[in-house]
Length: 122
Length: 107
Image (cartoon, rainbow over all chains, first blue to last red; front, side):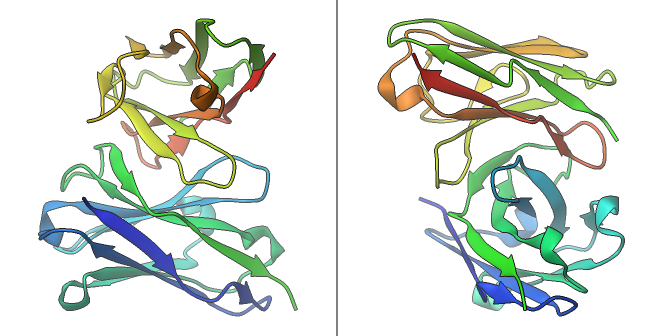
């Protein structure tokens, strides 16, 4: 059973960089067979797609984040990461990692991590 | 961006009821529509993809339909574990976008 687990600091100061990692476990996964995504949910609000990462190359980001987001991956450690720079209180949210069902960005998500709560505050 | 509009934003129903949630897209998204269930404090759970296909392990009480710009999620015979917030999401266009959610509460 595929499992995704987010990890990272629960508190980030304004103007600093938020860094989260998603570790994938549960069976042998060929990371190049899938796109891997990040989605966030501010307190009491809906879901927002941040972007999706492909180990084979292309990564797509939500333009609403104005180039503050970047993603990377490490197959040797079965994980991929999100960095969000110049954070403000508006970036306070639960951050989820998820897997697309294929190596196509335009395919649905099937598996989700449990979420990592991140607060931006001084 | 494609706007996804869900209605209603909330509804009250009783155990055993059948409920229908609507999701409208601002442009034709063919059948590139997914539905998710989220319970308080938990991660979303993928229910339906391609507008009407159930993910593995999802009970057949969940039924999705529609194409183009109008979609529905029907839940038959509501059970206590079905009370949750439901989201639709389009994956036909970049950026991927979600609806605002529909909260299904116990009457």
